[in-house]
Length: 143
Image (cartoon, rainbow, N blue to C red; front, side, top):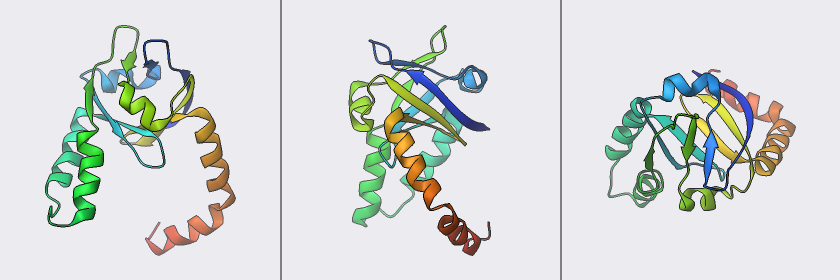
């Protein structure tokens, strides 16, 4: 289970350090892809396989399902964690998420999200301001 927020930097080669507490769970390799809200999603191979299978089973005759599958699947890249606990983020994914130097890695149970730190702070501030409204909508879903 991935939870918490962690501040890191992108190095000159485009690598980021994975929070130490998550390295064991990610040791067999990870998949990083375009996420939503201008961030990247990082999955274990097992979680990625579940998601990819669901995406592959969507009705491809619908334009929105094709677009979403392309966003997630075509943008995905297998990456390995090096001996220092870093992963290389491809240039096209760093550009997509606007990652410069300072980043935030956020744990969201079955995935990690990688955000430009300023974008994360803006997103969090906006979301926190609407927390009551969001909570009411979640109640409708049984949460």
